[in-house]
Image (cartoon, rainbow, N blue to C red; front, side, top):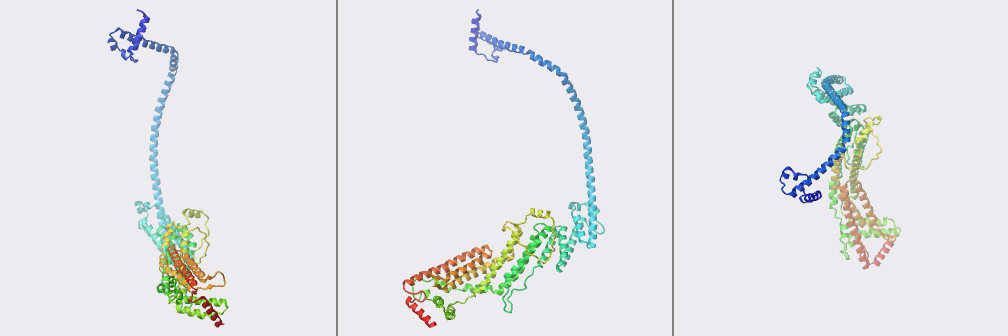
Length: 604
């Protein structure tokens, strides 16, 4: 048999059979199942290929045996060293375990000692605190007996500094009480503080009555050292004291000798200035001893005093000035001349308001004034004409000068309150707790005694802000509410009436300035002057709601009573001139000229 042919056939058979490379196809069971010659040749070929691969692998392993032998020799050399290290590690492990057990025993004993030491220290602290408390009570009791109030306050502070839980413990209640103070410590301390507070209040009030500055300052500083309740009582006593520094008028009624009545604005200004200067001078002292914002409590009580004083003054003033009666009087005024001018039309004759008594009065005054200025006549020659015309048409109403005085009083009161309100806002919204702390770290300046002698200081403060809760409390006063009601009920109706009646008078007393060109009406200057006066007074009251309503009313009055009348007069003037008649009398221009010349000759 040819080996070459056999190998080729085997290769072909192997390709045809394609056995699995893993050799699982030619397992013993599989080889036992081969039946044909071709299958045997294929299996034999595969086995030869596997044998070849094994031979190659063995050859490679045999070629690297030197490196393996070298590694084995190295391992053999370090084996004793590793054995020594293992023995040392075992010995060290035993030593560490032994030392750890010793350390644990020592640590547990140290913890027990620390616990015992802390208990002993706590016991010592309790004993010392009890001794301190007992000594403070004894010293406090003796200080009260000797009326040494500064020492009594210091000992009360010592007792007050001890923890409240310790004060109520059974140990303290068992060892601290003495024959002089048999009560439990907490109750005894509270009673002693109450007793000291009452003594300080009596002493402070007695010193305040005789204006003893040193004594008032002395007890003023002691109140906050006794605790919150005593501090509150001290602020209350101080508030009552500074209220006595306010000088108030006894009455604002009209004097019996006929002199000018005192102004309520002057009284309000005096009161709020005193309050502002008290706050300005004493705020730093109060905040220093009683804490930041403590002056707010005093300011609230000062505002209550302001409400009480101004409530009486405003009630008396309102009755004396008869505001309700005068309001009814101005409301009854019908503005007949103004309404006639507004209702005028372009027809001439008896129905024309320009031929009415009011228009006749206006024309007479205008004519007489022009003649007096043109021909340099004495004022007495024309005064009789004016006075007769005025008396013939004026409607019974309130005196505008008295109404002007009342309006100025109402506006002045509101303006003064708003100024004081702005001061409060600036004063109690510009200082923050950080600033108070910085001020406390600065060197102390000599303190001023609490004295009724107050000096005014200049203030440079930022614009007010409406974001401070303290100011919201200070702003809610009865005076603010009362002034708001007065502005709404009296000021706005009287102010609008005052403007309207002056505009009506401006139309009635209108005179043409014939000396210049173009001709100007005096009603313009009169109306604008009165409007400016009213608007400046309105803006000065500082009440946003009233200012808004007042400006709308002024706008309405100017548009109707001035703009509407001037428009009507111009329309009627144009119509009358085109028909050849004068404005005032309904006669021709030539006839009017003759009458003027005749009147001048008769006057000469």
